Length: 45
Image (cartoon, rainbow, N blue to C red; front, side, top):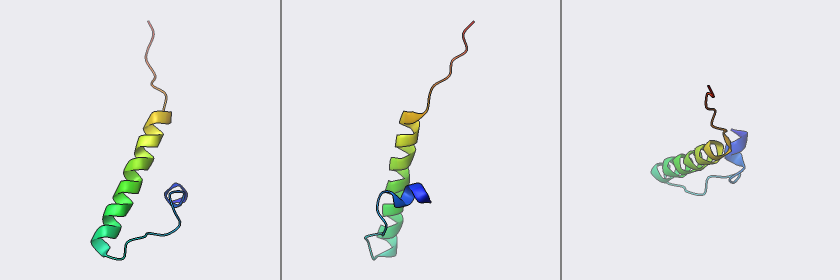
């Protein structure tokens, strides 16, 4: 939840459907950033 608030303290939309879309967009951005920062581990033989 703390990471979600880094993109802005408030949800800007007033319509519930748009609020849902806004939160989904924020979560997709967070998932992309965490995927970029995650190391890929490969087995070396």
